[in-house]
Structures are given as C-alpha cells and as structure tokens.
Length: 115
Length: 109
Image (cartoon, rainbow over all chains, first blue to last red; front, side, top):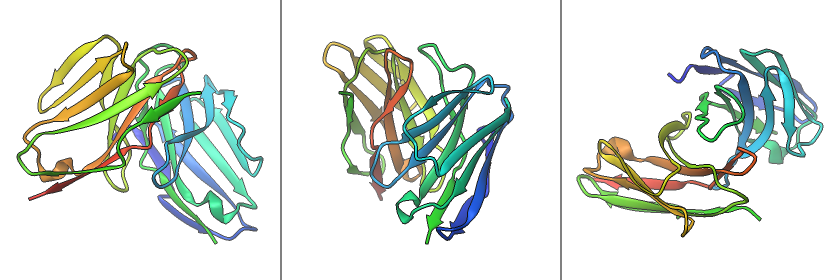
C-alpha cells in the first residue's frame, strides 16, 4: 500500500462514452499527477496539480479533462476517446512539486481499454 | 533534447547479481530515481542519488556518475520476487521527472 488509491482498476469503454477516473491520496501531500503508461514507453506526464491548482498540462488532448477539487482528490474525465488512448493511467502524489528530492508515490493504476 | 536510455529486457538467475544501466541526457540535473514496478502494480521507490558514488540499501545498490550521465542499479542475491520492471528517472532543471522506458528483469530458477 502506497497511500494512493485509484478506482476503477479496470475500465472498458466505447469511443462515445464518458467516464471518470478517481484518485485519492492519504499522505497529506500537496502535489498530484496523472501519468499515461503504454507498453515499452516511458511514463508520460499528463497533468500536474500543486495545492489544487493546475501547474502543467503537457499538450494533452482536450478529450482528457482533469479536476482537482481538493488536495486529496484528483479526477480524470474522459470523453470521446480513441483506441490509441488505451493504456495504464497512473496517479501519483508528492509532498510538494518543486525541490530536488521529491519522491512520488503511485497508485496501482487504471487499466483503460477503448473499443 | 532530453533522453533516458535503459535496456528493454534482461534475464538473470536466482541467487546471482545483475546490473541495470541507465544513461541520460537532460537539461539540468537534480538527481536520479530508481523505481520498481511489478506487473499490474504501482511503481515503488527504490533509491535516489544526487551525488556521485554508490548508495547501498540491503540487496540493492545504486550508483551515479554525473560527469558520465550514467547510473546503475545493482541487485544482489536475486530472488524470484525481484522479477519486475525497473524504471530510471532523472529530475531536470524544472524539477520535473524525466522517465526511461523501464527494464523488464526476468529471474530464472
């Protein structure tokens, strides 16, 4: 247990569906992250929130929409996805965003399949 | 550009020693992380190096050479449970993590 939970663990959706991924951290951290992990590729940073404010959006398509209602919760809203969006979506948190030693704690991920 | 290279896959024998290398080229450097990720699970922290040299932690050690842009993770007395992917990540000048694609380590009896 890393102190970061994600639901659902698995999700299958059609291209016209709307769904949301949820992440919750119980560590009292101030920064939260969404990553996309595809097979044999580096982790791709999608969004970063620090103190509930979005600080980075790494050119992610608008069909992915994040929401951070408080420092413990992070959502990723999905709509009209494409099959190439199928991947493992990881949430992570860290004490703060900046600083050299900033260990990130990861959730178990949501395995997303887009049909 | 920023680039992290590590082998895609390695195989080793139970009880042996294996070294997983990571080379990097990043804009600025504020440290290097190693994470372990078992299939279907979250990546978990193994080590962090910011100064040159070897950091030992039980069966696992991590080495860094900043002048060479090089790190390795050394695993001793390999156990079957060490079968996992090992992710190398550097911290750039903006304190952003730059990730390698990971090395899948297969341990054989």
